[in-house]
Image (cartoon, rainbow, N blue to C red):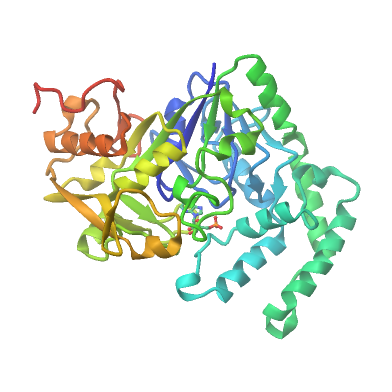
Length: 439
Ligand code: IMP
């Protein structure tokens, strides 16, 4: 059974967790493969709301093995907090959760570095990270000399390793701290991380081997992307991106599963755009409509609580990320949020230095200068949160979805009209969104 991937097509927060939860049934394994506790995936099951940062969204399904693979950076304290909160709510995680020994550990100095670099880079240059130590941890991973992996937590050299790295970090961070004092104590950190190691020991495993065995045994694997394709470190709005490959290209490098084994990718996109943190956002709204979307969509970060920047759907950007991430179809989310708007705009092209362009520029300076060219579609008044099939949607909502599908050159397979599992409309990819009996 070839692997299925769920990938965000915008700047994250596309409600991927809901789709992963929806698709989980019928899979043997669910895998988080990049990013870290910067992600916030919400799963709503009846009255229960689960907010997950590191653990795959499939954990709420009994019988599915949940893996956090090599490409993820793990903050052990956050992981343990999440595990404890699931246990308190009666979710059985024993034997259903494994993290890769190859995954890198977010250490206290990474969080400190994130804070310092955020202060140093102010104004327009500020990335506005989630302050979870993600960038510094990936930097040390690639740099190799100051990195600690999950399997290192179980080795006798850990204390020595922490002592050596702490010494270097204190020296390098001192010029940026008040009075040159860096609040890092190797003995305390060692004690803390040895404590984590003891509790995490049963969960640390060679997930690469587990995954490759699962591939050989033709098991069903669902890959859960975090953040979105426009935050990809290589192909997003660099440098205003996260530090991992958050587009479809990251699945293979983050798991060790060969790319030719991936059978299908579903791209998830909101029917408008949002972004948290700094960086260019061509269709951003600074008016009442932007505020209306923020309030209706409860657009506040799951991880940081920051208000999200809101804007119109950018079809040029999503067409690019559909191609980049190999999306076979789209799951269109939050359609209920646009109800009550008399008109809806969609960005269909850009103007760059007086020229019309229909591609997403690669340089941040160009992205900052582009002006969106909009097409206007009529809105709809009705509350659509109770819609369960295509026919339940007002014709203008269907026409809007149909136009987005056409502009992004991909069929729409799911439409989400609310956070609950049941608020999902499933479409046959060959089905017309606008069949003649309704138009
Ligand atoms: P970092 O991943 O914390 O380094 O943050 C880098 C950029 O990615 C910032 O603009 C963050 O707001 C953004 N970011 C990171 N994770 C998420 C996410 O899960 N959703 C949306 N934005 C994110």
